[in-house]
Amino acid sequence: MEQRIVSSPDSSQQVVIFSPQGRLDITTAWQFRLRLQECIENTTPHIIVNLSEVNFIDSSGLTSLVAGMRDADKVQGSFKLCNVHPESKLVFEVTMMDSVFAIYESEEEALNAAPEPMTF
Image 1: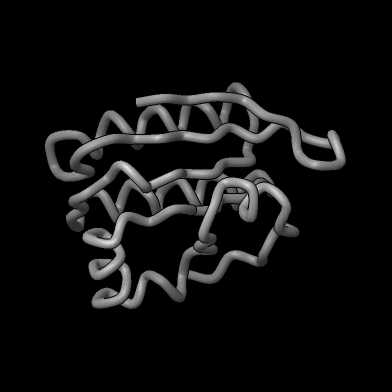
Image 2: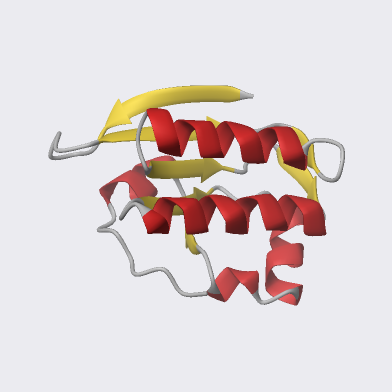
């Protein structure tokens, strides 16, 4: 999984962009969850998850994303998703999680968007 640090457009904060690949399911979600938690605690609470290479996500994967969003919220951070793979997008729609997460079409759009209030 690629992880990189970028600066916000106004250079006021660091943002970590995670780019998981393949499946975000019961076999990979726990490790992903730990990486999110470690990043929020030790690097920055501002997270973007690029899901363009995640072609399958299950309830464990959704749970890891919700946990990351809550962790970021606890420390006044931000948590955004972008480039949701078409096959994964259906899961967000069916579970109505597309109304819970801030979802953007591109990394650039997510990076430039003002922080949104978290709703859960």
